[in-house]
Length: 329
Ligand SMILES: C[S@@+](CC[C@H](N)C(=O)[O-])C[C@H]1O[C@@H](n2cnc3c(N)ncnc32)[C@H](O)[C@@H]1O
Image 1 (cartoon, rainbow, N blue to C red):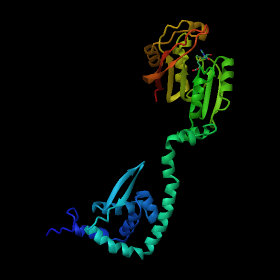
Image 2 (image 1 turned 45 degrees about the horizontal axis):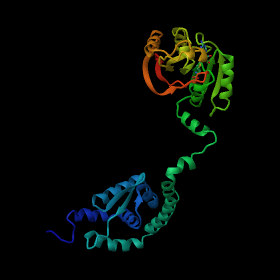
Image 3 (image 1 turned 30 degrees about the horizontal axis):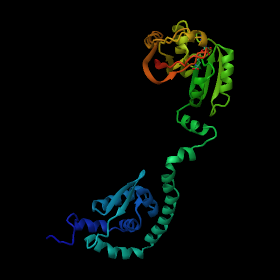
Image 4 (image 1 turned 90 degrees about the horizontal axis):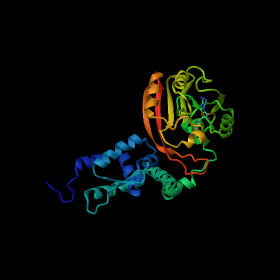
């Protein structure tokens, strides 16, 4: 028969079973004092998270819990005090019983520690999140971050910057590599690169090797990866260089080519020593396939090359592209 003092959703036998467990009573006792995340509750109880989660499921099934999202976590609280409610009347003597329980006293003591930790951490970070990049992200060299990230690679990488010039690409490669080989036929450019890479983060060994791209000073299969950054438009023909790069890469090694799309800035012949005014990506792709590369693909680049003419004219704004390819594994 319908009993007006029992809410329609309550299943009395299941509810009584849910409450007939000392751990669940401890949980209700804590959650009545404070809204807590599962992690906080676990620490306050001194139990395993899986055990606590199982108990919470039973209590949730009886409609005794409410969850609320706050920042990145979810907190749980109890609904035990609806006036005149069957649950409220059951809970009152159970709460009295908890007061004398040794376990509950210990729970309450641990709860104080958990709450003290929360106000020292969560609330603080909620307040300062908007300024954290200025407050808490200041490191002297960035070396620690680079090494943490590079440490995820299964083994050290041997990478090469081919036609390295003053080391623009090399500076980005160094933090990723265990050994970085910088090749250029201009000794003066290599000196500039040495200066620019004097303080690379991490323990990367940087080798500067004078040599021609047609006869790379690199052993067969020495490289895991290589970059040809803004270099191919300086060459009279591509195949000899690409064959050399293919030889120097290990099977499965990757080549990344950054190039200029064809353009009309003829002053770049004189001012920047360019042989070609950019290169058509289809010619580069065809040359890569001819010289044995596989998995060749073109990627757009959301960047431009912006050189300034020496006569003081306007800076150019030249579109770029990337082509990646692999030495067949
Ligand atoms: C435009 S710079 C690019 C430098 C660098 N990769 C960058 O992204 O800033 C071209 C470099 O390629 C070098 N280079 C051109 N042809 C070469 C060749 N056949 N062998 C070796 N180096 C070459 C030049 O000496 C020059 O330093």
